[in-house]
Length: 241
Ligand SMILES: [Fe+2]
Ligand SMILES: [Fe+2]
Image 1 (cartoon, helix red, strand yellow):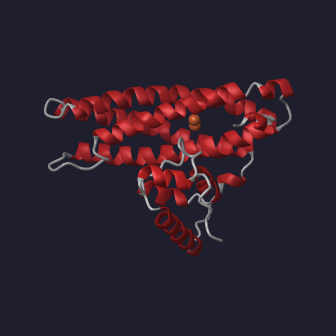
Image 2 (cartoon, protein in one colour):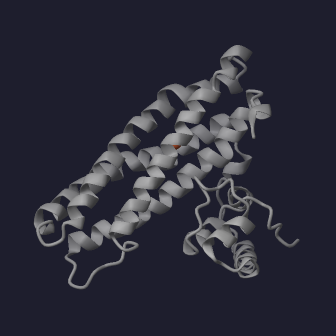
């Protein structure tokens, strides 16, 4: 079946997570910007809509040919999604953010005089990581436990109705994380390795690229799957607009 240009980019990835790869390659934001129809995104980015749809369809055909086994977040329950996000993304970030902070500080100390952008990069990363730790803690201690309780029928309607506010805060914080990630991408010219870069510099660029891709997946699962599912279960759909 041909793809509908009115589909939002978030929905395209909910249907088939493998599409995220091609959207990453095209520089199309499917997580924080996931609510826009693919036709609009192509217009805004000056991309040819038929070409983009064709690329997505080829990627679909390829991924069906060698379908990877693995859990599909779109079919998970609220509790399963929370567990999956904590295990797949939060646990990884808790290891990776401190490691990367150490590398970035080392790099800024060693080469910051010659390249002040490395100092800005370390600064942006530091506040990004600090905010993200606080953000994950809110999800793990407040929002996710509430969603698990709602799934078990342990949340009263009035309490479920209050979930709109914390979800709204999480969405805002995802946008802020997206801004920081874009700033880091810009400061490194798209994570490009400059001539003569030392090994620490190479390791930092590689890690930042991986971090960006992982954050896109992570935020996509929360913004486009978990939160809409939670709002639906809480009877908050009518507020959508
Ligand atoms: Fe999260
Ligand atoms: Fe989040």
